[in-house]
Length: 92
Ligand code: FES
Image (cartoon, rainbow, N blue to C red; front, side):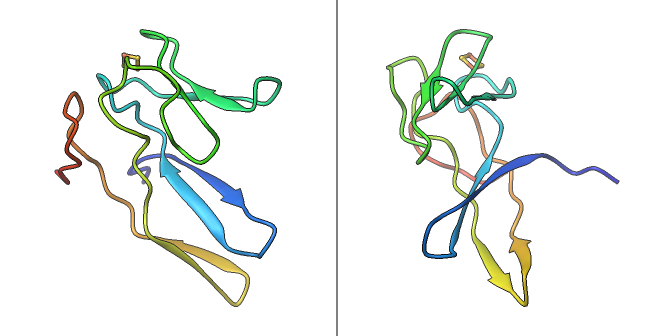
């Protein structure tokens, strides 16, 4: 059963950065744009750096990073959804 979707970024030191792919503006799904090296939301043009930081003022906050760790080659993620349209990150 699908409970959500994420982006996982493998860092040079072997750690992973994991983001909920929900736009923090109003909840559309962000796309990864390899050529621009960013995440982009087609709904209202929110853009985010690859570290999740917002690139413009459309989204109220950065992408929501999820807790994750790598154990024996498997990525374990604490999946959560968060309220959109608010500067403060609130789990729902
Ligand atoms: Fe992503 Fe509005 S929902 S920019």
